[in-house]
Amino acid sequence: MTTSLSGLGTRRKNRRINILPIFSWLFIALAVGLLLLELVRFSQQAERFAADVTVARLPVGGLTSLDAASLLERSYAAPITLWYQDSPIILDPAAIGFRLNREVMLAEARTGGDAQGAFWIRFFNYLTGQQATDTISVPLSADFQQNALRQFVAEIARRYDRPPGAAGYDVATLTFRPGSPGYELNTEEAEAIIESALYNPSQREVTLPVTSTDGSRIGIGTLRDLIIAYLDSEGFVYDGQSTVASVFIMDLETGEEVNINSDVAFSAASTIKTGILIDYFRELLFAPSDDEAFLMAQSLLCSNNSSSNLIMQIIGGDDIFSGIASVTDTLQETGARNSYISAPLYLGGDQVLGSIAAPTTSPNSAFNTGADPFNQTTTEDLGSVFNMIYDCANYGSGLMIAYPDGEFTSQECSQMLELMSANDLERLLQGGIPEDVRISHKNGWLENVHGDAGIVFPPNGNNYIIAVFVWENAEFFSFTRAWPLIEGISRAAWNYFSAETPLIAPRSDLPETAVECSVFAPPYGEVNLNDINAWRSGGS
Image (cartoon, rainbow, N blue to C red; front, top):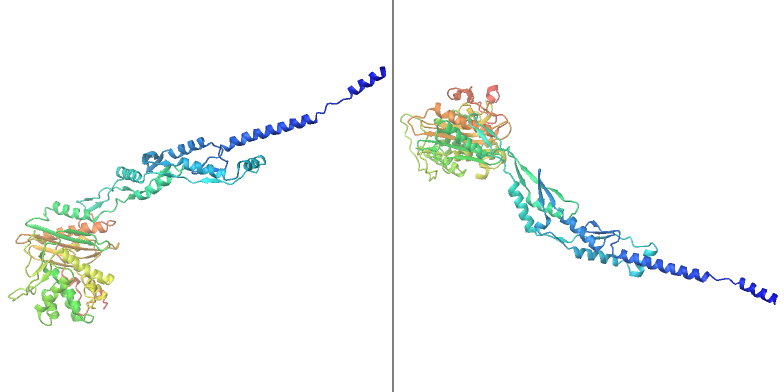
């Protein structure tokens, strides 16, 4: 018995508990728990955007839809600072109806994430670290009211734009002073820049495109104002019943004009000889002979009436009245509609003139200067004539276009200007510009009217036409009174076109009267129309 009990006890003591199944179930439970935990984590993560998702240029990776929506609203609702030079202007996007299509963009971002695979595939990739790395970028979807932006920009321009200050002048020196600069918003470009900023969350400051408008340029209207102010300061009423001043100025670079009573008819006096010169060249078939060149010089430089009459007689085939009609027709054809000559130029004594019918003209009827019924012009017409010569000489147009059948050449027009550049009176228009500056001009005066017209060629290349007449209803309008007026007007024009070298005071070196033509007119046989002063040095 003792032995048996002992053996039973031994068997009981050697019995072992099998814990392997326990650990197996434990690990299974742990694995399931971890799986459930990762599943919960993945499910929570699935409610957020993937790391590489951007919506409307903003990174929303790791954010919930609610947080992403908040980020979008904050970023795009931020005000935009617009800088008009140094002035900040705040634009609230909502003020122009800016609106994000937020739900559409977030839904597209969400759909893009879901498209990377079915749930369990994505979960498997998550567990194995093989999540898709494709970047999802959803473009901005937004709109605003274009008209509201346009009105906003227009209001900025209205409030902040500044026109340049008006230029001024000094009557005492006949000089000009520039106006202050102005500023102008380029509204079309500004709208485009602001629209770009509305669509960019990181660009919330904009420098508006502002152009500085130059106030330093002095408009030709200021020259007109100065001339009128100058005449007033001299006690000469430019638009009176007993005194009239007429001024025509043309900028030969821009075509801008000054017109002060430029359509008023005056006695042309010797200024008509410019028309005679043009018509003579039109009739010439060959280069001028010595006789013809000398005749031109006597007519234009010495203002010799008998030479001028002889030219018209030659033009008319020994019939002076036919030549007179031809000169008038040529003037009319070149645009000088209020200019004509209808009788020979007066030679004095018992000359029997005679006349032809004058053409119908229509000058300004508000003024009556008692113009010569046989010989009239306006400053506007004289300006037109000189412009036709200039364009012919320099551009192959002008007279060459008016007469397209070869009556004029550029060389002939250059010779006309060259001839008239020797008209060195040193008074009238020439007295208002610096010494030795080239001017091609023709003057003329009678007892109560004085005039001069031509082209000034400043060293800076700002060539211009100027024609001036002054008239007084008096028995004698002294040149001592009239010529300084013309010279002052000429000086004002010079200071406008050559502001870098102004004449701030009247020239003190002018002769009392005009220089005699014997001083500057070439002698017979030495009239070189291509170099009118060649005779001085013995050239030919």
